[in-house]
Length: 289
Image (cartoon, rainbow, N blue to C red):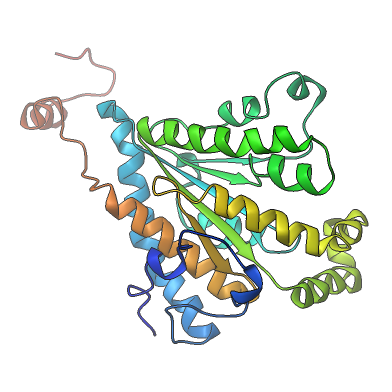
């Protein structure tokens, strides 16, 4: 079994400056020298520690702590956002998780600024929130499909940076992950869905329309990543051709973020010994003394 502890956030963290996604490997296993079986075993081994840290975060709600985590998952179709939810986020207690999947905005949502529905989905203190797609759709598909004019797109980059800085000020650790998949791997995954009747429900003919715009989406991602890659909320580009590595990498990012919060179990605000004595002499149905 390979130790994943050396695979820390800086391995995947995007450096500042212009972004060239073509120069970043989609099939790498950055910072991990094992194979698929090793990676799956490392993620399973990480599970109990990840779960305990998440429970400590959830327990902090009784102390009025504002700490919380927001995991933002962005990527082209089939890059594995659902797989991350099942295999990585699924390792922790679901009662402490808030998952929001953002689709095309509703009529009501269109009446408001693009961040209105995003703000409504921000996790409360003690929770790990996960955005399956996010506010970045409004500078990605909106740019590619020209759903907003150029000036509005420019405004949105700055609005996103201000919003994420606001979240950080409120005690939110923002983990932004771009699941970086190759066009060849996407083609294989779409074909696999077509060949398996049990996966036809996952296939959307519109995915091929979006695939035809691959170069435009890559450019939109490069611009968005560069414009919103801040010290407060940096981007991580996660190679996504290897599903097992993608899941492990995000597991490590979550673990590092939780560990960085210095979480402790809340101290009792009552007399523990006195409560033990009360319990020892308690009789179900009898009035409490």
